Every structure is written in C-alpha cells, then in structure tokens.
Length: 340
Image 1 (cartoon, helix red, strand yellow):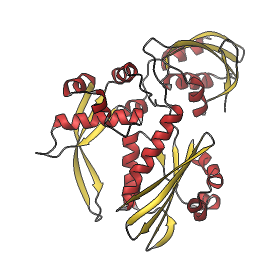
Image 2 (cartoon, helix red, strand yellow):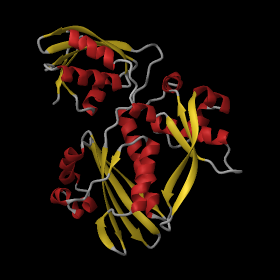
Image 3 (cartoon, helix red, strand yellow):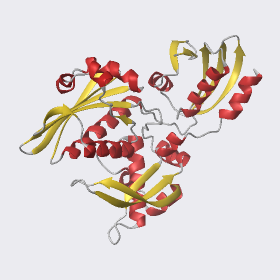
C-alpha cells in the first residue's frame, strides 16, 4: 500500500499538456486590419468551439463576452510566426496571436450556462482519404491537404492520424473500400494506429471544383456529410467540423454548478505498481473527475471514491482503453477491470 500512496502523490495534481492545449487558441494578426484584441477574441472563440462543437453562431457572441471578459479568462499570450505552404507551393510566414485561457474559469463559464462540453477524452481519428482528379484515383497524397487536416484538427482539438499508406496498410485497405464507404473493411486498421474512430473521405474533382463525402462510425452508428468547395482544402473544414459535432453529441457532458456527485469505483486486476499508476493517470485525465481517493486496497482489487462534476463517467470509460466495465451495482457502484 505504501507504493500505491507514493504513486498517488506523484500523479495527483498534474494537468496534462494535452488538456492544456484544448484551451489554447490562435488567430492571424494582420497589421492595420486585425488588432491584438480582435485576435484574442477570435482565439477565445476557437477554444469555445473546440469545447462545445457550436458552429451555427459564435460562442463569444452567444455568451455576450467582451474584451474585458476575455482578458479575465486569459492566462498568457504571445505572438508566434508560423510557416505554411501556399496554394502555389511556396512557403509563407504567418504572424499569429497564441492565447492560453485558464481552464477552470472557462469550464466554470460553460457550466454556468449549462452548455455541454467535450472534455479531453477524445478518441484519435484515423482518416483514410481518397482523391480523384486529372491524375486519377489514389490515396490522398497532397501536402496542402495534409496541412489543412493538421490545421483544422488543431483548431477543433481533434487528433487526426493520416495512415502511412505502406505495404502493411495496403494489405488491409483497398482504394475501393474508401470510395465505396466500406467502413467494416477498414475498421481493423485502427488498432495499428491506436485510433478510436475510423473516418473515410472520398474526394473528387468535378467541373465546379471539388466535392465528396466524409463517413465515420461512432458506437456502431454511421454518420456522413456531403462536402464541396472550389479547392481540395475547402473540403477539410466541413468534414472535421461535422465529426467534432458528432463527438460532442455522443460524449459531451454538462458540468453541474451544484458540485456534481460522488461515486464508488472498484477495479479488479491491479497486481503491479505500474498498473496502479496507469489507473491514477486515467482518473487524473478525466475531465469529469474533480478529485479521487483510495478507500481500500487488498489483493488485486482497489476501491476508489470519485468526486464528479457531472454525468457520463461510463461513456468516458468506454471511450478510453484503460478500463472496461464489468457491472454496475444497484447503489451505483461501478465494477471495473483493466482492459489490457
């Protein structure tokens, strides 16, 4: 038990860098056109969209936030220069304001409005994309497309993985699987990349520019969105935005201002200190878990008490790969086991 207590002290209180990144927004600074204040407000909007999936209106406008409100949430800001690829293949430099907002205050703002929030429990997304233009049909091989996926993935807080397209990948996945939307054939490839969701994008050039379809499956439910635009890169934003909205609809939780609830969790299969540390890290990274403590540890079973800020713990556990649910007792106690 002494080892477990020591590990608890070592892990509790950390705020993962991945979680902090969800509260960092960026906005382009254009001298004489976009001021630092305007960029700060746009950066906050980016963070709020990332957390809520709201896309019909600006969250900043919907909340009636002003510059003073944004500054009260601001933790730090800096100007950064980003090099990116232009449409003609040249490289250009872009000046941005990078603003980090204080996570507890942002969360409290959303909780006060009872807005659903997608926390840091976000599955990695393996994106298989097929392109069809004057060069023929093939796996996506456009640097501009890859840059757009990386940038919009950052903006929406999505970990999007593009497959290597090597011999191992091609032994599993055929171009016809992507273009035909045969997601059953492609899902097994997720294990290689540690992805929780597989998405397909069939993108084709036509007389009016580009058009295509994005398709993905979450919890056995298939969803899709039709996209079109003048350029290939115009098809990335609506696809990833729709994917974010689907994740918000399925996994977002509402933090309760009243302090939430307390639940008992019993985990079986912990026999090594490293397994115990893994469980602690998992709890620490759950956005619903405000605090936790060990109630009892014996043999291979450890009991915890969790302070929760809202509902949806079972969904968060299913979303991760650390624990699996064995049963739920009538009193609400969760009986879990290590999933690996």
